[in-house]
Length: 176
Image (cartoon, rainbow, N blue to C red; front, side, top):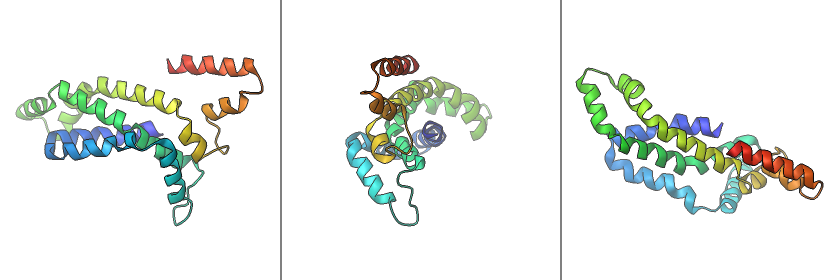
């Protein structure tokens, strides 16, 4: 869910900012890199405190975890899409498409999106690998209510070495 929402939000946002509002690119860069500066424990405690009461009490739910994961993958998505746009010189591509009579939607759909797809694919794979290995947020935000692969492995460590080994190998094969 987090990767789908992140893709749906970040692709148009980065393309619009890079092409239409280049002065705001530095601001978006800073905002996208903030999750690197905040440790997982601090983010989890802040999210639990913020969403444990009030009109939106979603503490301990999968929705809070999805939102936290969305924030975690922002830097990866932003950097991959932005670098892909820069490598194909998206401003010149947009100008050429507009000069040839394409509208904004046609330019986005048929020119920019296919050129951004390699960077987007790498960003999605990297984000998936990072989220698949994320233990701190999952354990602190949802604990035992929703058992992720990391929490399952943590609980089965002392029970059976064979089961833990099999799950770990499957885990590595899936990520690879």
